[in-house]
Image (cartoon, rainbow, N blue to C red; front, side, top):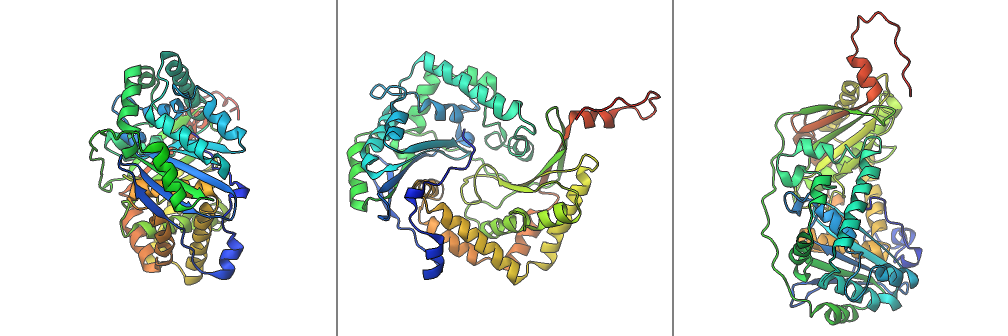
Length: 468
């Protein structure tokens, strides 16, 4: 599960922001969509400014959709997809793409797993052949399964168990804020579930979730729609569609009572809190205002919470916001808007939360002034168009939106949704969603501080120095 932001391939830039600003106030990404007879949805977004191409294959399966008692299986499978097929043994996929001057990546999220590549356009047929080949089948064997089970377990050790804070702001807080298993289990996976995965489990998972009718293929760059659709037909049309498991109902209402949890952390040097509120549903008229409100509150050093708590009251050391593991536009089930902050060892969570509540109350009561609202929208629009500049990111964005919304043209609607948000909209969503009743808070304290607080006050001996 690769969490880092994907680098921009300079050769794949299709539009400079300076040119955009100078010529127009809007830009529509070309979106051409066709569905093959086997159910594979194909998107082509042509751009001939560079002889490069970006490809994304998004499967509608992720942590939220994985089988019960197989936590982390969607993540495990993300690794297995690079372990070879009967036609392309392990290593062929990476060597073919990187040897031709390209790069690839992948990630697992609650509602999708994506596989992305970018390369010179001369490599497009090789990329599509490789993607179609592993959509058909994999080289299922016990040695590979055992190896990747160990790889995923080691990743959990490195990224969670042996890291300060250990992802508590997206793993632990989900477990506390949500009621249904689909939404609150650890998508990284338990060691017990990972070790219990069998070859039959792997075969069945590929059969159930990796068929063409559960996937979207997007191609962006130096190809025409006719060329892109012809190549998709050539390489993918012969793969038969396969039944997918019936969807479960993982919807949840907003919470009605605040939940507070305190945790200890043996690796942390300073305490931290994560405060999460259930978001408006995807497609809700409140979604765009919530996205703008999130940027207003915690989107960078100019945000209200950074200026109010870090620079002003000096009760927090940093402020970050999260929308689960995605963006405010790329989810398909209950998701949290989370504020994560480190705070001073001499402080406490109540002081930080009080500061957060005060800033939210100001917005709920008075809205946001026109100049600030314009600045926030400009920043969001710049970030959105920047995402669509690289062919790889554009293909990936279109494929994800098609998977989650059923319409890749949402990419061209989001700027209008952002522009249409008013101060009154922001007040409404602040009052509706960022309430104490809808909030879940985890206060994560270093072990030394937790022990010191718990020590008897009347102990006569001099205190033992605390190691930092």
